[in-house]
Structures are given as C-alpha cells and as structure tokens.
Image: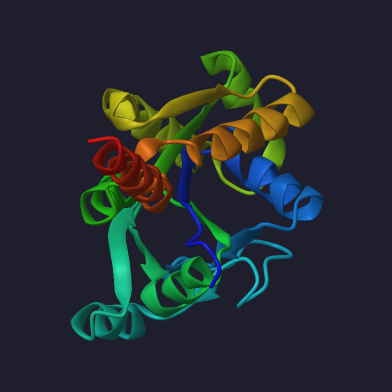
Length: 211
C-alpha cells in the first residue's frame, strides 16, 4: 500500500512567480500532482480549460458549493476560485504530493480542514519588482494592476500563518528550495506516525523481555 502524499499549498502575491515555480516543479519531478482550480474568471490568452483552470459560470460554481464538491473556495477580485475535492483525495491516496496553487483565503481554510498540509508563500524580492512583473505580463490594465497591489497589501497581513516563505529572486533556486521543503516535510512526526508506532512497539517488546 502506498504512503499517503503531502498536500502542499503554494500561495503568493499576484506576479510573485508562484505559477512559474509550480510549473517547473511539475516538469522536473514526477512525485507531484497539480490540482486544477475552478474559477469564474475569463481565461487569459493561451489559457486552456481543464489545463490551467476549469472555467465555469457563476451558476455552475455555486452549484458545486451546494453539492460540497469543493474543499475550499473564495472570492478574489470579483471572481470565485475553488478546489475540486475528488481529484485531490484520489491523488493523495495514491501517494502523490498534491499542489494547490491558491490565494491566502483558501489556504487558511485548507489548513483548518487539513492541519498536516504544508503552506508555502512566494514573495518577490521587493515591491518595485512585483509591480514590474505585473506590468510586464501585459495581460491586465493599470487599474487591475493597482487592484492587485492593493490586494497584496491585504494578504501581507496573513503571511505568518504559512510554514515557509520562498523569496523568488532566481527561479531555479526558488524551485529547488520549494522541493527541499517538501522533502524535509516528510520527516515531520505528524507524517511519520506509522514508523513511530512501529519503533515504540518494538521498544516495548524489548523492555518487557528484559523484566
């Protein structure tokens, strides 16, 4: 029977580079599975339904909420975002480390439901670099960019709830840092309960034999 995978939540300010880090992790390592989020926002250029997001109507999203088909959901910049439940549970049970690329509201909800999950927050080296990256994407108006920077200011108040921060200055190093943190998380006592019980029982047997 395979060991249960780790649920990994990767968040970050819009433009910090979390999507790029996730993409590189998926390309470089075979132990990860990416949970595809559901959203009501329209797709950006080159985004594909069922690959980048499940793009749905507001009515379809709210039906998924009613049917408890999401493990978390939140509203962000006027749109819904959420994580479908079935795929996540299936991949974890098969031993895959499942990555959820979601914003901070959803991440904190996930932490309440899955206390053993690993929370990583991606940050830019400074605010000016963040603004530069947002402008450089060329996908949003200046008004939307300012809205995203305002949202980043709000999100900065919740970063302390995360397990680790990744300061994304150089992408390859950030990818390796994320992978190292996941590998280290396997050794946490909460994820080694079966091993701890085995050693404990063996020690008890030895102790009884020595009496």
